[in-house]
Length: 121
Image (cartoon, rainbow, N blue to C red; front, side, top):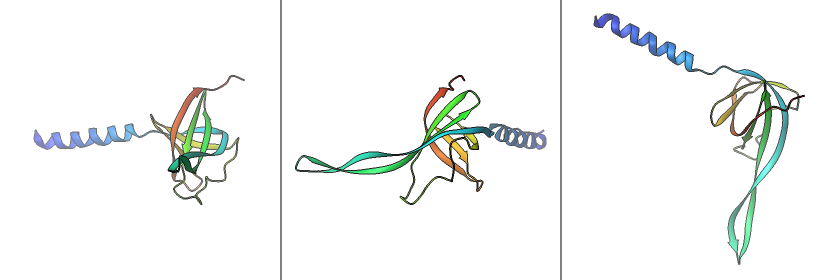
C-alpha cells in the first residue's frame, strides 16, 4: 500500500504545481511615461533637501482590462526595452505584480498600481 501512495502523492504535487503556473496573455502597450518620486533626504534650517527617484509607468490593455504598473530601475542607467505605444507584449498579472516578457525572454517585474476596465470604442 505504501509503495503506491508515494508515486501518487508525487504526481498530485507535480500536476498541481504545473496547473498553478500562470499563462501569459497578449497585451497592447497603451502608454509609457517616465516620472519621478520626490523624497526628502533631510532638512537644512527648515528647508527640505529632496531627491527625485525616476520610475516608469507602463499602461497595457489585456482584452477588456487596462493594467498600470510601475517599474523602478535599480540604477539610473537602467531603462525599459525599446517599447512604444501600440506594441504587442506577453503579460502576466497577479494580485500585486505585472510581469512583461522582454524581447530577451526574461520577465520585467512591475508593481501593479491600477486595474480598470478598458474604455469602450
